[in-house]
Length: 362
Ligand code: DOR
Ligand code: ZN
Image 1 (cartoon, rainbow, N blue to C red):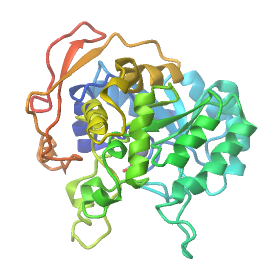
Image 2 (image 1 turned 120 degrees about the vertical axis):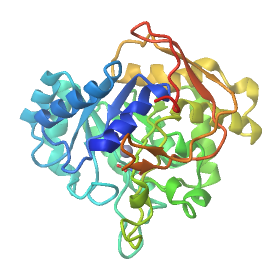
Image 3 (image 1 turned 135 degrees about the vertical axis):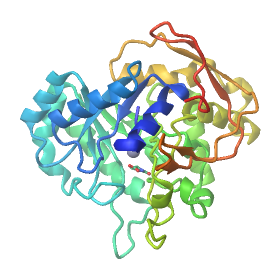
């Protein structure tokens, strides 16, 4: 329930990995260049994605921007394809320059979203400050009062705190009512500061935090409360962008690419949690992990249950070193390249197909 599929050759590459990775429904982020700020753009993007992967359900989102007015919210609801509106505080991540400077300026839009029952998706980080009171390490914790204020002002508005990365973020969601949920990525179940500080392919926003935060996120999956569900935030970047641009002298781009492996990485992170002693094997219930990967998110987004079923098997598969577009022009390196990963087997699909789709074949 949170993926970046991009445009052009990268869009074709990333979209081909949705079913290969064991997923049949995705909420697509709008931070394209230019961002998706109109319903017409969202409808056109939806059609392009649907042509690439006819069996996948694409839920679209709009990028919150001054041109997104209450009238646009009504139009978005009527379109049937737009399910959420993403709030990026300006400057916190990839393509967020056109994001929100003042949340209060959007209260009429939030009121319309509450009325039309669209979801508000929050990138919950405050921008870093020059004086250093806010850095990437406390940016999420510093944002949480805004989550509480929005929930208090719009108690019926469904709000998702995206890619929760801290214990404080988990607690803030737990203290809100049932209209507030949090997504958790696969990479935040695996990574801590140690991983991204030396590896551009693990660098993402919000940055993974401490070992305690990581353990708390895995425990939230195992708890299976229904208020946290999978949002992979799979965010592919061309290898050159990760390595500082064409001349290699620029900054790296934030984003971990996990689209081919999301459910497998989640299940393996839970197994790793048992090995790390964060909980006992007996504490892990299939309903909790299965709910996290599918049912809880579908229920929050008011979607019918999926008939699709996957089985994950240990067959010695390894995460590929990189994936390339058909013409070889775009190359993307996945998170945890080279590590062992469970293989995806579709047991049942919504359209009745049962053949294997693997990363290698697609
Ligand atoms: O790491 C990230 N990458 N975090 C985001 O919020 C955006 C994303 C991207 O679009 O690359
Ligand atoms: Zn994202």
